[in-house]
Length: 179
Image 1 (cartoon, rainbow, N blue to C red):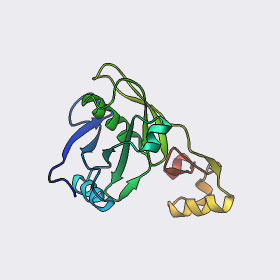
Image 2 (image 1 turned 180 degrees about the vertical axis):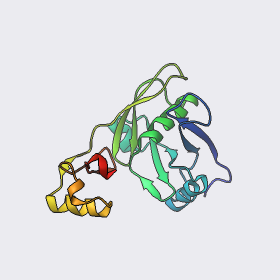
Image 3 (image 1 turned 90 degrees about the vertical axis):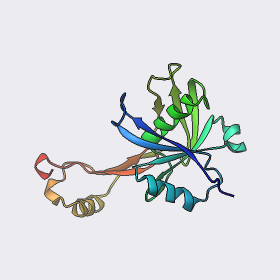
Image 4 (image 1 turned 180 degrees about the horizontal axis):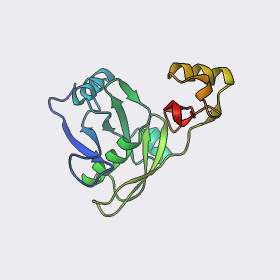
């Protein structure tokens, strides 16, 4: 049964002062909520991302994870995102839910290494290695991508490719006049 009340906090990531940086909602105690309910909460917060720390699974423990998190945007769940990873680790450290040192987050893309400093006010760092190796697009794919983003074929200034660390992105190099 879903809880009657949830605890949450808004964490300002990439800044050292309130009401700056990238805001992140971190919602605690939501492990019994359905995917639809988690999405509804993310929509209600209407921030770029909302994170939901979860209990570790047996597989997480076996793999060496220190904590688990699910990350939602108002449109759906993400397998990984940088600022929610940093903000969630910082928030869990503030609550003494994880300790300082090298920590491992379990999320949709697998395990992410996070460095949590002993000083609770110091920034958290993460190591994200590309999970989607760069893949070069064919000339036809690059031309189609250029058309889709409103850039003429003559404005493409090099190879187009995809790559990512959990979310795959299209990289399309264009001339300065095309921007």
